[in-house]
Amino acid sequence: MDAGSYTGLIERYRSVLPLPEDCRVISLHEGNTPLVRCLNLDTVNRKEIKLYLKLEGMNPTGSFKDRGMTVAITRAVSEGCHAVICASTGNTSASAAAYAARAGIKAFVLIPEGNIAMGKLAQAMMHGAIILQIRGNFDDGMSLVRKVADETPVKIVNSINPYRLQGQKTASYEIVEALGSAPDFHCLPVGNAGNISAHWVGYSELAAENNQNVTQACGFCNGDCTFISLPKVTSKPKMLGYQASGAAPFITGKVVEKPQTVATAIRIGNPQSWDFAQAAINESNGWFRSFSDEQILNTQKLLAASEGIFCEPASAASVTGALHDIESGNVPDGSTVVCTLTGHGLKDPDIAIKQCHARLETIDADLDSVRRSILDDL
Ligand code: F0G
Image (cartoon, rainbow, N blue to C red):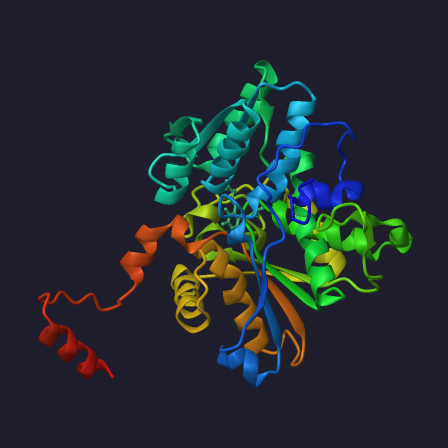
Protein backbone atom coordinates (compact mmCIF):
# COMPACT_ATOMS: atom_id res chain seq x y z
CA MET A 1 0.00 0.00 0.00
CA ASP A 2 1.24 3.54 -0.75
CA ALA A 3 1.96 5.42 2.46
CA GLY A 4 -0.81 7.72 3.50
CA SER A 5 -3.05 7.32 0.50
CA TYR A 6 -6.18 5.46 -0.48
CA THR A 7 -5.37 2.60 -2.82
CA GLY A 8 -8.70 1.10 -3.74
CA LEU A 9 -11.51 -0.89 -2.25
CA ILE A 10 -9.77 -4.27 -2.21
CA GLU A 11 -7.11 -3.00 0.19
CA ARG A 12 -9.72 -1.24 2.26
CA TYR A 13 -12.30 -4.02 2.48
CA ARG A 14 -10.09 -7.03 2.06
CA SER A 15 -11.44 -8.81 5.12
CA VAL A 16 -14.94 -8.98 3.65
CA LEU A 17 -13.95 -9.84 0.08
CA PRO A 18 -13.44 -13.41 -1.14
CA LEU A 19 -9.93 -13.10 -2.56
CA PRO A 20 -6.81 -15.19 -1.97
CA GLU A 21 -4.40 -13.44 0.38
CA ASP A 22 -1.44 -13.48 -1.98
CA CYS A 23 -3.31 -12.45 -5.16
CA ARG A 24 -2.09 -9.68 -7.43
CA VAL A 25 -4.55 -6.85 -6.87
CA ILE A 26 -5.78 -5.23 -10.09
CA SER A 27 -6.90 -1.78 -9.03
CA LEU A 28 -7.31 1.75 -10.34
CA HIS A 29 -8.02 3.06 -6.81
CA GLU A 30 -11.77 2.79 -7.31
CA GLY A 31 -14.30 3.42 -4.51
CA ASN A 32 -14.14 6.03 -1.75
CA THR A 33 -16.61 8.11 -3.78
CA PRO A 34 -18.21 11.32 -2.45
CA LEU A 35 -21.53 11.26 -0.60
CA VAL A 36 -22.89 14.74 -1.21
CA ARG A 37 -25.92 16.23 0.55
CA CYS A 38 -28.49 17.99 -1.65
CA LEU A 39 -28.94 21.62 -0.69
CA ASN A 40 -31.21 23.19 -3.25
CA LEU A 41 -34.09 20.88 -4.13
CA ASP A 42 -37.44 22.37 -3.05
CA THR A 43 -39.22 19.10 -2.37
CA VAL A 44 -36.36 17.88 -0.22
CA ASN A 45 -36.08 21.06 1.83
CA ARG A 46 -39.84 21.44 2.31
CA LYS A 47 -40.10 17.90 3.68
CA GLU A 48 -36.91 18.18 5.76
CA ILE A 49 -35.40 15.17 4.02
CA LYS A 50 -31.68 14.54 4.30
CA LEU A 51 -30.99 13.51 0.71
CA TYR A 52 -27.49 12.30 -0.13
CA LEU A 53 -26.15 11.51 -3.57
CA LYS A 54 -23.47 8.83 -3.84
CA LEU A 55 -21.40 9.99 -6.80
CA GLU A 56 -20.36 6.72 -8.39
CA GLY A 57 -19.48 8.60 -11.56
CA MET A 58 -16.31 9.61 -9.68
CA ASN A 59 -14.89 6.10 -10.04
CA PRO A 60 -11.91 5.73 -12.42
CA THR A 61 -13.95 4.85 -15.52
CA GLY A 62 -16.89 7.03 -14.50
CA SER A 63 -19.34 4.47 -13.15
CA PHE A 64 -20.04 2.10 -10.25
CA LYS A 65 -18.94 -0.85 -12.38
CA ASP A 66 -15.34 -0.35 -11.26
CA ARG A 67 -16.20 -1.58 -7.76
CA GLY A 68 -17.23 -4.95 -9.11
CA MET A 69 -14.64 -5.06 -11.85
CA THR A 70 -11.60 -4.68 -9.57
CA VAL A 71 -12.72 -7.77 -7.65
CA ALA A 72 -13.84 -9.79 -10.69
CA ILE A 73 -10.65 -9.12 -12.64
CA THR A 74 -8.38 -9.65 -9.63
CA ARG A 75 -10.11 -12.97 -9.04
CA ALA A 76 -9.97 -13.94 -12.74
CA VAL A 77 -6.24 -13.20 -12.90
CA SER A 78 -5.61 -15.15 -9.70
CA GLU A 79 -7.34 -18.12 -11.35
CA GLY A 80 -5.04 -17.84 -14.37
CA CYS A 81 -7.55 -16.37 -16.87
CA HIS A 82 -6.14 -14.60 -19.89
CA ALA A 83 -9.40 -13.25 -21.34
CA VAL A 84 -12.67 -11.87 -20.03
CA ILE A 85 -15.97 -11.21 -21.77
CA CYS A 86 -19.13 -9.25 -21.09
CA ALA A 87 -22.32 -8.03 -22.70
CA SER A 88 -22.94 -4.41 -21.94
CA THR A 89 -25.08 -1.34 -22.39
CA GLY A 90 -21.75 0.53 -22.18
CA ASN A 91 -20.42 1.02 -18.67
CA THR A 92 -19.51 -2.58 -17.97
CA SER A 93 -17.62 -2.71 -21.25
CA ALA A 94 -15.70 0.47 -20.39
CA SER A 95 -14.79 -0.87 -16.98
CA ALA A 96 -13.92 -4.38 -18.16
CA ALA A 97 -11.73 -2.90 -20.89
CA ALA A 98 -9.87 -0.65 -18.45
CA TYR A 99 -9.24 -3.31 -15.79
CA ALA A 100 -8.25 -5.89 -18.41
CA ALA A 101 -5.75 -3.37 -19.79
CA ARG A 102 -4.41 -2.82 -16.29
CA ALA A 103 -4.09 -6.57 -15.78
CA GLY A 104 -2.55 -7.18 -19.21
CA ILE A 105 -5.30 -9.56 -20.36
CA LYS A 106 -7.82 -9.46 -23.21
CA ALA A 107 -11.37 -8.11 -22.96
CA PHE A 108 -14.13 -9.04 -25.40
CA VAL A 109 -17.22 -6.84 -25.18
CA LEU A 110 -20.60 -7.31 -26.85
CA ILE A 111 -22.57 -4.09 -27.21
CA PRO A 112 -25.87 -3.26 -28.91
CA GLU A 113 -25.05 -1.50 -32.17
CA GLY A 114 -26.17 2.13 -32.16
CA ASN A 115 -27.45 2.05 -28.60
CA ILE A 116 -24.51 2.88 -26.43
CA ALA A 117 -23.40 6.32 -25.30
CA MET A 118 -20.41 7.78 -27.14
CA GLY A 119 -18.21 8.20 -24.07
CA LYS A 120 -18.55 4.54 -23.18
CA LEU A 121 -17.72 3.37 -26.69
CA ALA A 122 -14.69 5.66 -26.71
CA GLN A 123 -13.48 4.12 -23.46
CA ALA A 124 -13.78 0.52 -24.66
CA MET A 125 -11.93 1.47 -27.85
CA MET A 126 -9.16 3.38 -26.08
CA HIS A 127 -8.55 0.61 -23.57
CA GLY A 128 -8.06 -1.86 -26.38
CA ALA A 129 -11.06 -4.13 -25.92
CA ILE A 130 -12.15 -6.32 -28.78
CA ILE A 131 -15.54 -4.82 -29.50
CA LEU A 132 -18.32 -6.84 -31.05
CA GLN A 133 -21.28 -4.66 -31.94
CA ILE A 134 -24.29 -6.92 -32.24
CA ARG A 135 -27.43 -6.36 -34.25
CA GLY A 136 -29.49 -6.95 -31.16
CA ASN A 137 -29.99 -5.60 -27.65
CA PHE A 138 -28.25 -6.17 -24.31
CA ASP A 139 -30.40 -9.20 -23.49
CA ASP A 140 -29.38 -10.87 -26.78
CA GLY A 141 -25.75 -10.11 -25.96
CA MET A 142 -26.09 -11.57 -22.48
CA SER A 143 -27.46 -14.85 -23.72
CA LEU A 144 -24.68 -15.08 -26.34
CA VAL A 145 -22.01 -14.40 -23.73
CA ARG A 146 -23.37 -17.16 -21.49
CA LYS A 147 -23.23 -19.62 -24.40
CA VAL A 148 -19.82 -18.70 -25.75
CA ALA A 149 -18.23 -18.79 -22.27
CA ASP A 150 -19.28 -22.42 -22.01
CA GLU A 151 -17.14 -23.39 -24.97
CA THR A 152 -14.20 -20.95 -25.00
CA PRO A 153 -11.65 -20.05 -22.30
CA VAL A 154 -13.11 -16.63 -21.47
CA LYS A 155 -14.36 -15.53 -18.04
CA ILE A 156 -17.69 -13.69 -17.83
CA VAL A 157 -17.40 -10.40 -15.93
CA ASN A 158 -21.05 -9.42 -16.07
CA SER A 159 -22.76 -9.21 -12.70
CA ILE A 160 -23.71 -12.91 -12.92
CA ASN A 161 -20.06 -13.30 -11.88
CA PRO A 162 -20.50 -13.34 -8.06
CA TYR A 163 -17.28 -11.39 -7.47
CA ARG A 164 -18.84 -8.38 -9.20
CA LEU A 165 -21.57 -8.14 -6.57
CA GLN A 166 -19.01 -8.65 -3.81
CA GLY A 167 -17.10 -5.60 -5.01
CA GLN A 168 -20.24 -3.53 -5.50
CA LYS A 169 -21.47 -4.22 -1.95
CA THR A 170 -18.66 -1.97 -0.68
CA ALA A 171 -20.72 1.09 -1.64
CA SER A 172 -23.07 0.23 1.24
CA TYR A 173 -20.09 -0.06 3.59
CA GLU A 174 -18.88 3.38 2.59
CA ILE A 175 -22.33 4.91 3.09
CA VAL A 176 -22.70 3.41 6.56
CA GLU A 177 -19.23 4.61 7.50
CA ALA A 178 -20.00 8.12 6.24
CA LEU A 179 -23.43 8.44 7.90
CA GLY A 180 -22.60 6.43 11.03
CA SER A 181 -25.70 4.32 10.37
CA ALA A 182 -27.72 2.97 7.47
CA PRO A 183 -30.03 5.44 5.69
CA ASP A 184 -33.81 4.97 5.95
CA PHE A 185 -34.13 4.58 2.18
CA HIS A 186 -31.68 3.72 -0.59
CA CYS A 187 -32.74 4.52 -4.16
CA LEU A 188 -31.12 2.98 -7.26
CA PRO A 189 -31.78 2.76 -10.98
CA VAL A 190 -32.40 -0.84 -11.97
CA GLY A 191 -31.35 -2.47 -15.24
CA ASN A 192 -29.75 -5.88 -14.99
CA ALA A 193 -30.52 -5.64 -11.23
CA GLY A 194 -27.05 -6.52 -9.95
CA ASN A 195 -26.34 -3.27 -8.16
CA ILE A 196 -29.45 -3.15 -6.01
CA SER A 197 -28.76 -6.79 -5.08
CA ALA A 198 -25.14 -5.99 -4.18
CA HIS A 199 -26.15 -3.05 -1.99
CA TRP A 200 -28.58 -5.27 -0.12
CA VAL A 201 -25.81 -7.82 0.47
CA GLY A 202 -23.66 -5.04 1.95
CA TYR A 203 -26.35 -3.64 4.24
CA SER A 204 -27.35 -7.13 5.35
CA GLU A 205 -23.77 -8.08 6.22
CA LEU A 206 -23.34 -4.91 8.24
CA ALA A 207 -26.53 -5.50 10.18
CA ALA A 208 -25.80 -9.18 10.80
CA GLU A 209 -25.41 -10.01 14.46
CA ASN A 210 -21.80 -11.04 14.18
CA ASN A 211 -20.66 -7.90 12.43
CA GLN A 212 -18.50 -6.88 15.39
CA ASN A 213 -16.04 -9.33 13.88
CA VAL A 214 -15.89 -7.30 10.69
CA THR A 215 -12.77 -5.20 10.76
CA GLN A 216 -11.35 -3.35 7.83
CA ALA A 217 -7.90 -2.64 6.56
CA CYS A 218 -7.88 1.11 6.92
CA GLY A 219 -6.26 2.03 3.65
CA PHE A 220 -5.32 5.51 4.77
CA CYS A 221 -2.25 5.02 6.89
CA ASN A 222 1.08 3.32 6.82
CA GLY A 223 0.59 0.50 9.28
CA ASP A 224 0.04 2.44 12.54
CA CYS A 225 -3.63 1.77 12.21
CA THR A 226 -3.97 -1.39 10.20
CA PHE A 227 -7.58 -2.11 11.09
CA ILE A 228 -10.65 -0.08 11.84
CA SER A 229 -14.01 -1.33 13.04
CA LEU A 230 -17.24 -0.49 11.31
CA PRO A 231 -20.02 1.24 13.17
CA LYS A 232 -22.48 -1.16 14.79
CA VAL A 233 -25.50 -1.08 12.52
CA THR A 234 -28.88 -2.06 13.81
CA SER A 235 -31.11 -1.16 10.87
CA LYS A 236 -31.21 -1.62 7.14
CA PRO A 237 -32.71 0.74 4.57
CA LYS A 238 -35.80 0.14 2.52
CA MET A 239 -34.50 -0.50 -1.00
CA LEU A 240 -36.24 1.44 -3.78
CA GLY A 241 -35.61 0.35 -7.37
CA TYR A 242 -36.52 2.62 -10.25
CA GLN A 243 -36.81 1.70 -13.91
CA ALA A 244 -37.54 3.47 -17.18
CA SER A 245 -41.17 2.88 -18.29
CA GLY A 246 -40.10 1.35 -21.60
CA ALA A 247 -37.76 -1.12 -19.89
CA ALA A 248 -39.56 -2.04 -16.68
CA PRO A 249 -39.80 -5.82 -16.28
CA PHE A 250 -40.12 -5.49 -12.49
CA ILE A 251 -43.28 -3.44 -13.02
CA THR A 252 -44.83 -5.54 -15.78
CA GLY A 253 -43.81 -8.73 -13.97
CA LYS A 254 -42.44 -10.31 -17.13
CA VAL A 255 -39.53 -10.09 -19.53
CA VAL A 256 -39.78 -7.04 -21.82
CA GLU A 257 -38.93 -8.28 -25.31
CA LYS A 258 -38.09 -4.93 -26.89
CA PRO A 259 -36.97 -2.57 -24.14
CA GLN A 260 -36.81 1.11 -25.11
CA THR A 261 -35.51 4.11 -23.22
CA VAL A 262 -33.30 7.10 -23.77
CA ALA A 263 -31.44 5.92 -20.64
CA THR A 264 -29.51 3.35 -22.68
CA ALA A 265 -27.60 2.08 -19.61
CA ILE A 266 -30.81 0.51 -18.28
CA ARG A 267 -32.31 -0.54 -21.61
CA ILE A 268 -32.71 -4.12 -20.38
CA GLY A 269 -35.76 -6.36 -20.54
CA ASN A 270 -34.52 -9.56 -18.92
CA PRO A 271 -32.53 -8.74 -15.77
CA GLN A 272 -30.08 -11.46 -14.79
CA SER A 273 -30.31 -10.76 -11.05
CA TRP A 274 -34.12 -10.75 -11.07
CA ASP A 275 -34.58 -13.02 -8.03
CA PHE A 276 -31.88 -11.35 -5.91
CA ALA A 277 -33.32 -7.92 -6.61
CA GLN A 278 -36.89 -9.00 -5.91
CA ALA A 279 -35.70 -10.52 -2.62
CA ALA A 280 -33.95 -7.24 -1.68
CA ILE A 281 -37.20 -5.35 -2.28
CA ASN A 282 -39.32 -7.88 -0.37
CA GLU A 283 -36.97 -8.29 2.59
CA SER A 284 -36.48 -4.55 3.00
CA ASN A 285 -40.18 -3.67 2.49
CA GLY A 286 -39.15 -1.48 -0.42
CA TRP A 287 -40.68 -1.15 -3.85
CA PHE A 288 -40.09 -0.79 -7.60
CA ARG A 289 -41.51 2.02 -9.68
CA SER A 290 -41.03 3.26 -13.23
CA PHE A 291 -40.81 6.69 -14.83
CA SER A 292 -41.00 8.10 -18.34
CA ASP A 293 -37.91 9.19 -20.24
CA GLU A 294 -39.15 12.76 -19.99
CA GLN A 295 -39.33 12.61 -16.19
CA ILE A 296 -35.85 11.07 -16.01
CA LEU A 297 -34.30 13.69 -18.31
CA ASN A 298 -35.99 16.49 -16.37
CA THR A 299 -34.39 15.23 -13.18
CA GLN A 300 -31.02 14.95 -14.89
CA LYS A 301 -31.30 18.63 -15.84
CA LEU A 302 -32.58 19.62 -12.40
CA LEU A 303 -29.58 18.05 -10.66
CA ALA A 304 -27.12 19.59 -13.06
CA ALA A 305 -28.67 23.06 -12.87
CA SER A 306 -29.54 23.24 -9.19
CA GLU A 307 -26.93 21.09 -7.42
CA GLY A 308 -24.02 21.25 -9.87
CA ILE A 309 -24.05 17.48 -10.28
CA PHE A 310 -24.04 15.97 -13.76
CA CYS A 311 -25.04 12.33 -13.95
CA GLU A 312 -26.01 10.19 -16.91
CA PRO A 313 -29.72 9.69 -17.70
CA ALA A 314 -30.03 6.23 -16.12
CA SER A 315 -28.58 7.55 -12.87
CA ALA A 316 -31.20 10.29 -12.72
CA ALA A 317 -33.89 7.61 -12.41
CA SER A 318 -32.90 7.17 -8.74
CA VAL A 319 -33.54 10.82 -7.92
CA THR A 320 -36.68 10.92 -10.09
CA GLY A 321 -38.07 8.12 -7.96
CA ALA A 322 -36.88 9.61 -4.68
CA LEU A 323 -38.48 12.98 -5.41
CA HIS A 324 -41.73 11.30 -6.43
CA ASP A 325 -41.85 9.18 -3.28
CA ILE A 326 -40.90 12.10 -1.03
CA GLU A 327 -43.56 14.36 -2.58
CA SER A 328 -46.26 11.70 -2.32
CA GLY A 329 -45.40 10.89 1.31
CA ASN A 330 -44.27 7.30 0.70
CA VAL A 331 -40.96 8.46 2.13
CA PRO A 332 -41.88 10.14 5.42
CA ASP A 333 -40.80 13.72 6.18
CA GLY A 334 -37.45 13.91 7.97
CA SER A 335 -36.10 10.66 6.48
CA THR A 336 -32.49 10.09 5.51
CA VAL A 337 -32.33 9.02 1.86
CA VAL A 338 -29.39 7.99 -0.30
CA CYS A 339 -29.63 7.99 -4.10
CA THR A 340 -26.89 6.30 -6.09
CA LEU A 341 -25.81 8.31 -9.12
CA THR A 342 -24.40 5.37 -11.01
CA GLY A 343 -22.55 7.06 -13.87
CA HIS A 344 -21.08 10.42 -14.87
CA GLY A 345 -22.98 12.78 -17.16
CA LEU A 346 -19.98 13.09 -19.47
CA LYS A 347 -20.55 9.50 -20.57
CA ASP A 348 -23.44 10.62 -22.74
CA PRO A 349 -22.88 14.17 -24.06
CA ASP A 350 -25.17 13.60 -27.07
CA ILE A 351 -28.32 13.16 -25.02
CA ALA A 352 -27.36 16.05 -22.77
CA ILE A 353 -26.85 18.48 -25.62
CA LYS A 354 -29.92 17.30 -27.51
CA GLN A 355 -32.31 17.80 -24.63
CA CYS A 356 -30.83 20.92 -23.11
CA HIS A 357 -32.18 24.28 -24.24
CA ALA A 358 -29.28 26.31 -22.90
CA ARG A 359 -28.67 29.38 -25.00
CA LEU A 360 -25.62 29.12 -27.21
CA GLU A 361 -24.98 32.61 -28.47
CA THR A 362 -22.38 33.41 -31.10
CA ILE A 363 -21.01 36.92 -30.91
CA ASP A 364 -18.20 38.95 -32.45
CA ALA A 365 -14.88 38.83 -30.66
CA ASP A 366 -14.93 42.42 -29.43
CA LEU A 367 -15.39 44.00 -26.02
CA ASP A 368 -18.62 45.77 -26.96
CA SER A 369 -20.39 42.56 -27.91
CA VAL A 370 -19.25 40.74 -24.78
CA ARG A 371 -20.22 43.68 -22.57
CA ARG A 372 -23.66 43.93 -24.19
CA SER A 373 -24.32 40.23 -23.68
CA ILE A 374 -23.36 40.40 -20.03
CA LEU A 375 -25.43 43.50 -19.32
CA ASP A 376 -28.43 41.92 -21.10
CA ASP A 377 -28.26 38.95 -18.80
CA LEU A 378 -27.46 40.49 -15.41
N1 F0G B 1 -26.86 2.95 -14.11
C1 F0G B 1 -25.88 2.85 -15.01
C2 F0G B 1 -25.15 4.09 -15.39
C3 F0G B 1 -25.57 1.60 -15.58
O1 F0G B 1 -24.58 1.52 -16.47
C4 F0G B 1 -26.30 0.47 -15.20
C5 F0G B 1 -26.04 -0.83 -15.80
C6 F0G B 1 -27.32 0.64 -14.25
C7 F0G B 1 -27.56 1.88 -13.72
C8 F0G B 1 -28.13 -0.50 -13.76
O2 F0G B 1 -27.42 -1.31 -12.87
O3 F0G B 1 -27.64 -3.40 -14.14
O4 F0G B 1 -26.85 -3.39 -11.79
O5 F0G B 1 -29.22 -2.87 -12.32
N2 F0G B 1 -25.26 -1.01 -16.77
C9 F0G B 1 -24.87 -2.32 -17.30
C10 F0G B 1 -23.79 -2.17 -18.35
C11 F0G B 1 -25.97 -3.20 -17.65
O6 F0G B 1 -23.66 -3.04 -19.22
O7 F0G B 1 -23.04 -1.21 -18.30
P1 F0G B 1 -27.79 -2.85 -12.77
